[in-house]
Structures are given as C-alpha cells and as structure tokens.
Length: 589
Ligand SMILES: Nc1ncnc2c1ncn2[C@@H]1O[C@H](COP(=O)(O)OP(=O)(O)OP(=O)(O)O)[C@@H](O)[C@H]1O
Image (tube, rainbow, N blue to C red; front, side, top):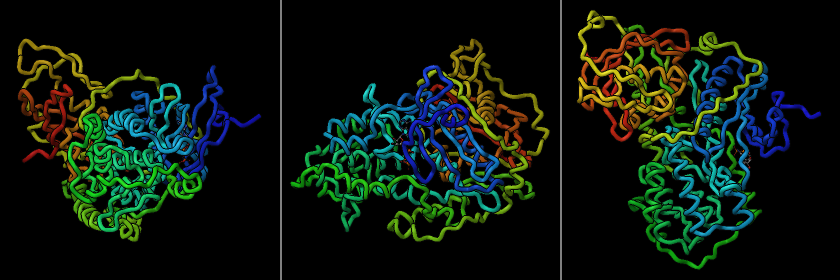
C-alpha cells in the first residue's frame, strides 16, 4: 500500500517541483469524501538544527495567516492543515495542506487558447483586484502574482489567488551567526517582479506591477522576457503586441508597470476604481514613452509559442534566487534589532528601525537611480552589524522542544467580510525603559465609559452602547481596553489584526516600519515572546482622540525582560468604527 503522508494523505500525483519543494495532489483518507487537497512541501534552505525552531515558529505564524485569508475570502484556497516532519533530522520539511482548486491557471489558458480579449482580461482584473485588495488590507504583500498563480475556477469561472510568497520566504529565512534573520533570498518571479522587490523591498505596489505584467501577458500572449524595452526610457514596449487594446486600458496598465512604485497605483483598491471608471485616475508621469500609448502598428497578436514559453518561462519559475538585498549588503537586517545596552533606555525599537532606515533609504534611493543589474552585483553578506542580538543558542533555550510530527487542523471560522482599513506599509513602537514612578499609582484618572463589550482581536466591531452620562463618548469602546486588546491580539499571534489597529499613517511611517508589515512581524513575531501589561492609564480623552499611557514588560525570546513605557495617541476612525493607534512613543518626563 502506498505510504500515507502524515499517516493521512495519499499522494495522487506531483503537480510541481521547485526550489522550495514539491507540490502534490493528494486525497485525505480521513475525510468521508476522501476529498482532494493540495499539499505543498517546503524544504527549508537552512538546515541548522539550532535555527530550525525559529523557522518552524515563523512557519506556524504564516500558516495562521493563510488560514485566516482562506477562511475569509473564498478566492483564496482554504488551509486545511499544516504539519512538520522529521523536525529533528537535517531534512525536516514543512507541509501545508490546502483546498484543491479545480480549474486552469491563466498560464495554461493562454497556452491552450492564445491571447485573451480585452473584455476577458478586464473581467479577470475586476474579479481578482478585490481579492488583492483584501490581502493588502490585511497588511500582506503576495509577492508572486503571475499567470501560474491565478487559477480560473471551473465551478464559477472566478479567479483564485494561490501560492503566497511569505511562506516561502519564511522557510528560506537565513539566520546570521548572531541569530538575526535576514532576507537574502528574494521571493518572486523574474519578469513579473518589479525592481524594488528584486532588491528586497516588496510593497503593495509590487503586487500591482506583477498583476499589470500578468494582464499584459494575457492580452499579448508574450512573456515579459519576450517584450522589448525602450532603450532610452526603459519603458516596456508591449502595445505593439496588442494594438487593439483601448487607450484607457492601455494607460491603466502602463500605470501599473511604472518603474517607480510611487508612479503606480498604490494599492489594489485604487486600481480597481480606475478600472471601473474606465481609465487610469492619473496618467503616468515618468518612464513611459507616450508614443507607445497611441502606437498602432500592424504586428499581429501572436498566439503563444509553446517552445518559447518553456524556454522563457521556466527560467522565471519561483526559485530561491540569492539576489543581494541592499539591506543585507549593508549589514542592515530587515528585522528591528534589540539593544541590550544597560544605559537605561532599554529597547528603543523606533530608533533602531530609524537607524536601519537611514541606511536603507540611501540604498533604495540609489537603487532607483540605477539599473537593477548593478544592484545584483552588490556583494552579499549575511552578517548583521547591529550588536547585542540574541544568539541562536539563547533563542533556542527559549523555545519549546522540537516536535516530531505536529499537525494542526485549523478551526473553521465563519466567513466574515471584514470592513478593512487602509493598509499601507508597518509600525514599531518606541519602548523605553519602564521605571515605576509615584505617578504610576495615581488614582485620579479621567473616567471613561466602559461598554460591556470590546472589539474582539479578530474582528474589531465596537458595540454600540449609548451612555446616558457621557453623551460625547457614546458608542465608542473603552480606549484602555482597546490598548489592552491590542496587546492581547499580539500575544495571541494575530499580527494582521494587531497591524490593522494602527492608523494608515502610522503603518506607513517608514522610520518605524521601513519594511512595512514585515518590520512589524519581525519584531512582534520574531523577537517578543509575550507582552505583560502592568498598567494602562487614561491620560486624556476627547470626542475623537485619546491619550493612554501603558506600562509594559516585554518578555523577549532570548529570555530577557525589557520594561517599557509607551504613550499612545488614539484617533477615532468613524469609517471603521473603531479606535486606531496614531502614535506611540515614550512619555515625556
Ligand atoms: N490550491 C491549489 N489548487 C489547485 N492547483 C494548485 C493549487 N496550488 C498549486 N496548484 C498547482 O500546482 C502546480 C504546482 O504549484 P506550485 O505553486 O508548487 O508551482 P511551482 O511552479 O512548482 O512552484 P513555484 O511557482 O513556487 O516555483 C501548479 O500548476 C499550480 O497551479
């Protein structure tokens, strides 16, 4: 009898093999229907047993995110289970068990049917952009949007987004000798991946670029590698292969593939609005050669050439490509670093992030003024220059003992439409040393109305309870409880939800979150074991703003404790009906 994977899943066939591992079609022998599922095997590139536990923890976190995404959006495959095998051996592997999507990838469709009509492409974009918008509002950059990763589902013809790059990044994480994680491996597919992503700075606009290149492939049947660039401007000269595309769609797609991310649509929602309006909301101002927008030459739409496809596309498979990241090259890790200095300041996460930013801003500014090839020539170094980081050994001591085989059946949650907030790149909080003061014990605090319910960590829906005593505060949940709830959410590992409790401005604060959401998760998920809330004190409360002081203790994964005082400024967001953190820093004095 054929061996069952994890004593449960019978492999039916191999769907794909890549640098990250294999993908199988399997049947679940423990379900009455023996339902089919897709099992993604992920092989960590770092087999050092000392760091295995760290990779495993990150894998678990990413799996939790996939679970949430698949549960809440039916155009993302559900995560049925995840497990690890042979954890204690050097070849330990991670597995994700996912919903099998019956259908054809966009890639297969183009190969079998040739280039698509404009209407068909608009239809696909219209149906995939809300999914991407959902993902972006969760603070997640997909990182590998391409024709192979969108399946047109048979049952309803809807596009389904598969293969999130974050998990691959997790298992390909490289740890420095001092135990810091770096991202010297870039996830993405050459041709569909924009330059900023290829130098280690994926952002929401990177997914927009990839989706634009995917749409161009659908319209032209041409892979990115087959489309010439304007030697003077670098513009991608795709219009000659799709001469009948209407100017409005052409201009919209031109905007998506601008070299500079700022010149693209900044997120999926903006692009969808432009698509629905029938034109790009603003015309690209750089790079694009205007002549290309109106060019009507006679080159016919070529149906895809299978051989060309194989030659050109296979090199573009998502594989671990060791492209030097500028941050790594300069010895600046993506993750916020911990200062263990005993000068009384404790951890000042924001400042450390800021230090990283100074370096990376210079590098990125240079990067955008240079051809990508120059960047690829940069020397790769995995050393992190910021000292006092926990060693792998220290971190290992913090960890649970490795588990031989671990399987988790994610609990089913009802599908919920979350009214999302603006999602832009991540936040760190300045966390100075906590020194108890007499002020900490003061009892005369401003009072606030305490509603009977507070937002849940998953779906913050403030309860609408009118208060007869303080009409100006009616309908708003307690700010103190909001702050407590924020940390509870982090302690529960629900980082996307915690991230969404930050205002868009704070999320987009590059000093605090140079890597966006990745900086946020690197800190809270990678460094902090738990946050103990010692005190939350209301300082000031107005109708739509509030100030709250929190005295905290960070229990770090290296076993150390770091007390911190944080002053939060909160703003009431009427659109999402919840408090948001608009600022967090060390209280004055
Ligand atoms: N949830 C799913 N349902 C149906 N088919 C899937 C699912 N996930 C992946 N596949 C298919 O399995 C095949 C292999 O998938 P995989 O993501 O491993 O692609 P790959 O090309 O081998 O790897 P990569 O793109 O990561 O380099 C692809 O044809 C893909 O469409």
